Length: 631
Image (cartoon, rainbow, N blue to C red; front, side, top):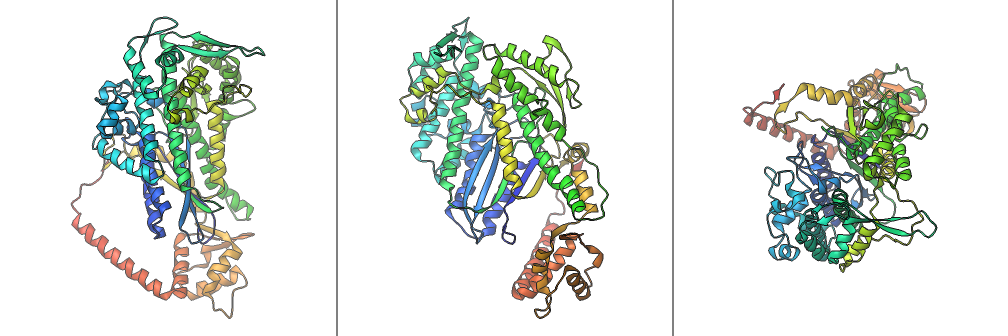
């Protein structure tokens, strides 16, 4: 970043529970320490993390602090390498978790933190001064606690962090209001045919009181859905809903409320860290790992698509990109084969033939009047008719009974169940729900629903379209930076320390393409740069009165001066010079530091010897530590 004045990015990837979030924290701490300048922005960057974790992470069967959203944090630096701003972009918040969790999983951390850490008066005001087991959205999984986690203490830390990142106490109060309303909404139960009746009015009235809307308005918005005729006048019709349909609308409202609060928090954090002008950045990407569950739905389909795109970037910039560079530079090179997952990406987002996402969008546009099950059947019909026979797609059944399809992803085969694919892809709220929220007497809630309902000319965007656009944005941002990779490997599935499952690790190493990458690195060169850059940097080692005129002259001088350097380590291409091993570059950098700043070099050697002494001392003390179990 400093030497080349180029933006950098760190792409952190791996399965759920492999350690991506912890790796992100380590990188942020390192950057904060490395700059040696304590600034307000630096504190905001560090404090944004606990806020984002509280609202975006949850306990899953694989990970007690699993990120249920993707995050790309760009830290902006000035010319002296001090952080002056930051921007957070988020992707794919798993809003479905608000309404549904698998057994032994939890909802987002913030719900339990609020329930156990919010002051008693505010909890009483919002009607949540009771145990978490009283709320269906928290109790359905049978798990309301996490081992070693003190929700009340974490709430206090999150509140302090919220203040640091620019969220006022009044805004925090309203955020907790919405969270309480979501918990009451989850307790509303329906019965009977259309229009469904509410079984117990208490949760409905509690939700309406917290949202400050009329109970009848809220009730009507849940057991009716408003549709518009296709005529020029656009007549509105309120269509009664049965119990199951009303429950789906209830969950849609809860998920939307949460997603919009989440977006508000991200916007507030970005506003507090905003910096004008153009800056070089270090971008850190922490996103969902590849997911394969017993039952995989639309959420896993989207997550795995984004991971396919990231794998494509990895291939383009490492295995394919590096080999292409050798050919372009006229180097002797024998290509190393690798799996190109472009074929899988095209299967999902392609234009011709249309990929799965485009078929889904087309289905949603053409069958808006059908129920969810009928729309999904129509989607499967299009899928089979268009993509049957694709080498990376398998459909076990055909005809009206088809409910599943399998994609051969780079990380393995995943079978998806199409139930509610169309409903989730539509991603638009019914007009009656928006109207109900806009009728609230709470300005904050009205602010969360800025839709102009009088403007119905523009077709609503689908979730699939937004995900493709987000993935394209991500690829564009990452491609503008010099990439660095952190591949997190999960050592076992038991969340246990000192347990190394060799076959489990081997599978990850294979599908991540690490073997091919290592083969290319071993056969290739650790360092490459334009000849003029190499000359400008390491030419300083030669006497000032005889500066080098070419790379070959400089290499000859260096090898004669230092017996550690070998000529075969260097090779020139058309425009660049290549160095085979990193040790050679380390020697060159050491020589350069020794000449340009001999005092700093002596201090560095002294510090190294001291750290080496302490490391040996520590190793002696802990020689009886338990050893890792390799299976």
